[in-house]
Image 1 (tube, rainbow, N blue to C red):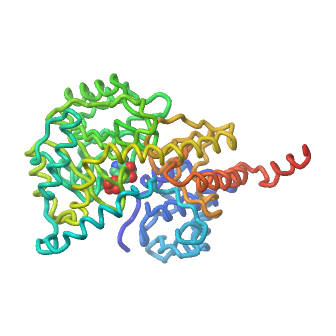
Image 2 (cartoon, protein in one colour):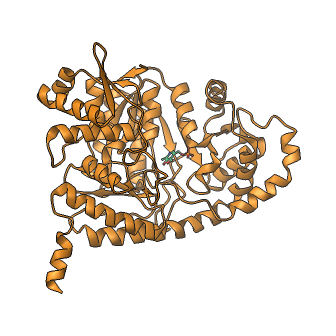
Image 3 (cartoon, protein in one colour):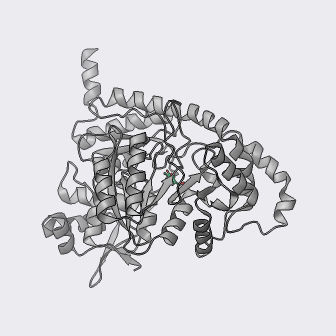
Length: 472
Ligand SMILES: Cc1ncc(COP(=O)(O)O)c(C=O)c1O
């Protein structure tokens, strides 16, 4: 057995797991979802029944019934003397095999590749001989690409040299590198909740303690909480998505930017600005956030959402000595970004304005279709208005996000429950609905969601149709 999860960590990861049926079955479904999301790895020891019962305020009999249900469904095995251990997923688990025909996967918010990309690939392939004569990777990135990225910042009014840029394998590896180099165990990290979950995971993996600051689609960042956090815990880092925050789609106002700049300066905190979603401006009416240039600001960028996630090209823009520290800490987990992809990136980066306009059209079609379908289908839900980004952070009114997602999975719609984006529990009344898929796919997804919702809420699926028949 490789690892174990404590009762406290499991209770926190579960968030609100209670559905309509018996408590033991809802809890079993909550644990199944954590396994499906790979948040509990195979061969992880679950807490003893007594400990989990205490952490969740349940009777031991309920937890015993939960574990029995998980054993019966093949998700865990219980061995005398060594407790209950999760098993690898079977292909028959709802949602375990994403390649099932007709499955709609909205777990990732990844737009399709920019249509101009095949031509750029073909151009770069013509230089293959020169490329293949070199090593093909290096720890800081090709100077031509670093210069192009620096130019991209200079065009935005941020004087930048190539020595202030490190090319990474997507923004995710940039976040992991920053966490492993700039953080010490038990350091505090101020982080938005909800947040981009793999970013939070990178800080957790470095041993940091995360302190959440709420963000909502309607009211933005909780500045009182941010000020208290800066003052009380003196965070080493603050991880923020100031423009088209994932998942809320919210962009910081001038006052919000100023509050984070002030708080971080007083506390000596390094601000990590994740700008992966910053170019995804659909309505072109959002004023750019423009954090000032400062030594203690580190920016992370990526071509993942604007050009194609499959390129795996991202970067860090920071002071030259931070870049040098990151470069020397990198080889332990990654020797560099492949040069072919870097050569492609160097050719597209100067065209980001044109590419962003095309992305805006694609995202607008998805956003408008899913918003319309959701408003019509779920008048009781809180559907936010967003001007950019990749998703809607929908309010579903009741804390049933996990059972809803489990029910939808069994119907061939894969979504992530609200708690997946939480830092310290909660968000069970929320669902992230990405609008990066095609409009007709999103409309089908909303239909499936309606059937799942009726099931979870106890309304027979056919009831709405029967009513309609009676009227006609
Ligand atoms: C806010 C945010 N940061 C980072 C990433 C990771 O990006 P990449 O694909 O460049 O690793 C994502 C991807 O979804 C994201 O939404």
